[in-house]
Amino acid sequence: MKKLIGVLVLVCMVSLFGMAQEKPLPEVYGGYQFTSTDGGWHGNGWNGAANFYFTRWLGATGDFSGVYGSATNLYTYTGGPVVSMHKDKLSPFAHALFGGAHAGSGSLGNSGMAMMFGGGLDIGNQRMAVRAVQFDWLSLRFNSVSNHNNFRVTTGLMYRF
Image: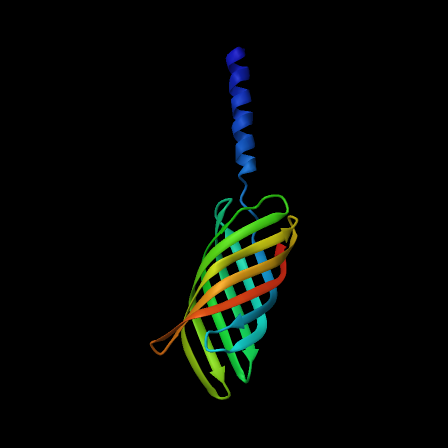
């Protein structure tokens, strides 16, 4: 009888650890973005992203954005790993995103590569959150010319399914 009780206690304790390690719900984000390039161009626009977590702290992100300014626009479409720590109402995160970019001015356009490395902080509950801030270092490459000293800052709302 003592062995049975011991096994039941052990199973209950292990299941509690399993519950504590539940992976976060999928997330969809939308918000405002400010982008600045080292060439002096600045743009305002939108940013949208979706996160899916494989474990409690590791997931994948798909990120899409568009910024507009001075008769020029820049679109990025990237994806990559995200690491996040979901604690109570705060969720700090970091990501590395890789993909493409398209810049246009008038009827001219050019496509290239984009890389973003950064992170931020989400504040909210299990269903809704505010992305308080997200900073990304942005590297662009068009026609064999790299432009590394760019950044973007975003803020907005997130919904967790």
